[in-house]
Length: 487
Image 1: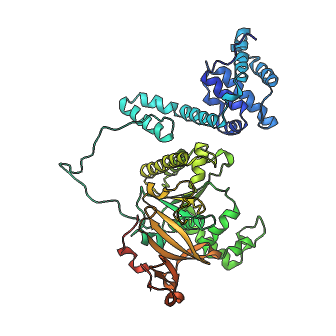
Image 2 (image 1 turned 90 degrees about the vertical axis):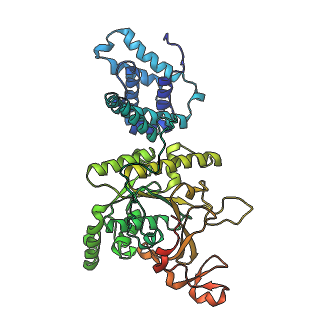
Image 3 (image 1 turned 60 degrees about the vertical axis):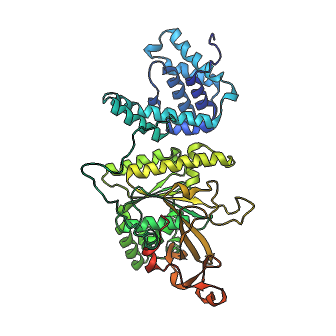
């Protein structure tokens, strides 16, 4: 062939990533349709990509032998009038040759995945751009704002508009009222519940109850007809995941569901249990949705843009979401930014902050409140101080980015203290909680414990006379509305 080796053109480097990096190939084979390539200048690469998809469909995703690709291209071009001339066919084969000439050192999987994401987003945005061009400067500004939110452009845009707090003419005062989310202890700690557009964190150690509590909040939100959506990034959705939720929603012990043989239906339950399940599910089923973002089926890699799109779909169905649960944060960050578990702290903080900002924008844009789960790693942090529940894995000052942060701190056996704070070393509201593991439900346990100022935590009421300065619980459930809130 007369083609010159790779000239480092963007499209050829991109195609080289697609067909020579297995990680990129697997992602692209599900996410990148042929229709996103333009006819004309990109036709050779569209043909190459079509041959690659055919090969993987029959042989699994792996590097394609170059001789196979040449033969497949020849076959695909035969009979097409635009390739009746030999020069036209040669131009396609030369493009394939240049793709295989890209040096291995140029093929970085993380970079390839980022190229893939940008390519898909920009091509998907093309119709919106054409529409924006017809609406003038205002349409273009809206389009670029949308692209920045989706992560396509990193070009900073600083607004010159200031906000005057005192305006002449009509001034409408008042704030968005707090709305109970249904979980009584959360609503009391927030003095009435979360407001739309607010974002809160939920921290706990592995197995500390993050998923149990956040799913309980989603269930209770559905009970009061605040439509809830749970986006789970940790594990695929299955009966193993849902059984605790069934128990929480129905009030039945989870063993009732776990004892059934696989594939059983509701008719396998005892009559009184079946009636109770049908009643509870009927109350909430239309008000709660779970989305599997665990990476299966290519989902869970697009960051906040994916959540945004699903919330838009719910609005289009006239079923707008009000409560959003993200379980859990660091997997969302790692998948979206293609970070490894060994990334340096400064990188982690930078990417975490970007994702926090994106979640706050999402909450404001969709008029929802968001609860974001994050796992604690108390073995990490400065060696000069005792590790506490506030030493978050990777993110460190996670709570500072949000309106507040809930923390589950194990106390004794099934007792956990629920804290609400704005950040580390900041005064918190706290409440002892009892975990009913059989029903996957947390319930307040204030009457069983007293607060010890010297230890700075709750202790069992029976031990109050053994611990100096032990006092009555602060605050009790009835007093929470009068206390200073960390939110």
